[in-house]
Image 1 (cartoon, rainbow, N blue to C red):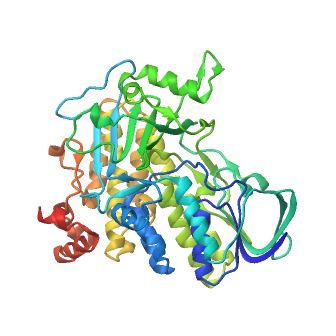
Image 2 (cartoon, rainbow, N blue to C red):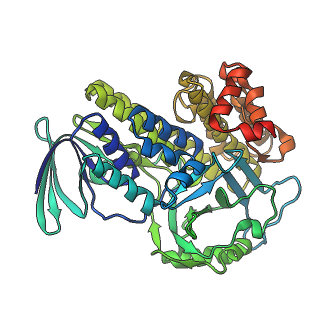
Image 3 (cartoon, rainbow, N blue to C red):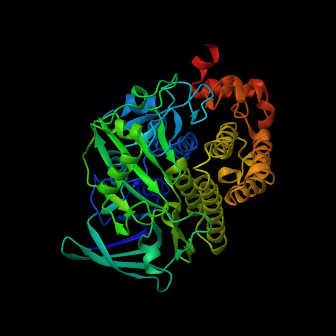
Length: 512
């Protein structure tokens, strides 16, 4: 079996298939090589408003209307209800103490709830990856991309100006020749192994994870009373040495898992199996155990002894890694999708004119810088998991940057929000770095108080979501009034923001 193409993409998850779809629209001959077979389990399932906007932009830029329907919950359910997914109205965090039933007071000291949409119609989504990825693969094939699944690659040759891949598929030899290779094979994938690109983490402590899919998970709002439905969100249970995620799909399945530090998968020096680690965690936290009392795994248990991953390089003369293959930080803030989608946008722009050393090196620089900013913030959050007040305040740095970036792009002013997490902004970027550096030093007393003030000062010029309104007691709804009141921060008029809200479906919230 032989194939000759312009671009070979290793990996046919959502990122590889999106690349293939868009490249076909650019007239490129494309082949995708996949070692597994769809439908298949995949971690990384929760979208964000910025990710949804990037999907819309991809769909519009490359004439992919079949992709645009997945950018909002309402449109998805009307157009493709057979593809399972979940409603995500925002982020919910609950802070637990070992051995104690979860409890809180009216000040919400042990909660953080940040809404991303005012209603279900324009809500964000969780992607049930067995359905979602499989659909995109079929779309790419229908667009003319070659797809070779169940293929094991044994040799990669970059001699000359072409790339050659050799391997086997279903017992037969395979050879693919291409002008360029895009690695979408995820962490520790093809190029990372071939060129030994594994790099040490800069700030994040070693983390490990266990996870699977369940049926029968109780709704958290059946245990905790709240005016905002916490299960229609990315639900986080946070404790001193890690956290648990709970993501609900509309097919009765719930994705759940734990990311841990400090050897959480070991007892007495003996490594636990993934299911044993999970049971040991539930034994420590009675309220979480109650949520999973009747739950039953419906997929194998998976474990990642080294969850986070970084590479030292991202590009070569005729190859490039997508961000998902260049670094996986942590699912804590659902950063994987927007980071990867930003990378897809940039790499596709490079293909419109033809890759060069200059454009590829710039792609590498930006990719590594965005991974740096993400890793540093997530590391600061891990270091603050035993201090809910500081953890919550640090998290608002993310929500301020994300909401500001989305609004700026929707107003066609992307220059106001350079870089993921505004890391390239001349004011916000250095301040973000400084706040995280202080948090990583575990400040106490007056130093901690000063850090809280510094975080507020960093957020204020970019706060368009009422994040500094302490009267909200760490429950932040998505209000049109906040954006209108802060239009000047976006260099816009109230009328321009009002028109934006109308376009985006905020109307019902604005007039209520």
